[in-house]
Amino acid sequence: MEDKLIEILKRYSFNEALFENIKPESDLKNDLSVNSGRIMDIVLDIEEEFGIEINDEEINNIRTYGDILAKVNSGTN
Image 1 (tube, one colour):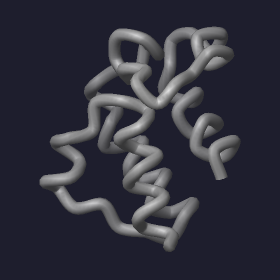
Image 2: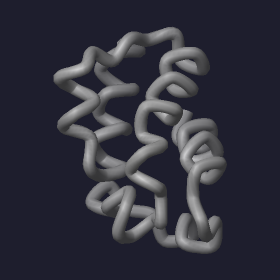
Image 3: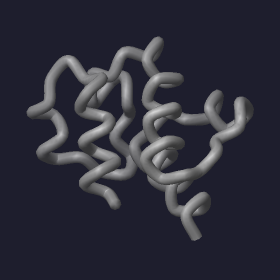
């Protein structure tokens, strides 16, 4: 599951090499070079890939890889 999630995030990063040392506390914008304007695209891809729904309030709270990982884990259980 994490491999698929990282694959999705890499599509929206300016530097895929940053994902070699990804941690739950890795900030999407600052640590992984993900354009913050693309968060909605990432969420849509995640929803489609994992068959989950992330509501607008949850989307506004996504800042780190761990935030996204938690949403996927809670949605797929």
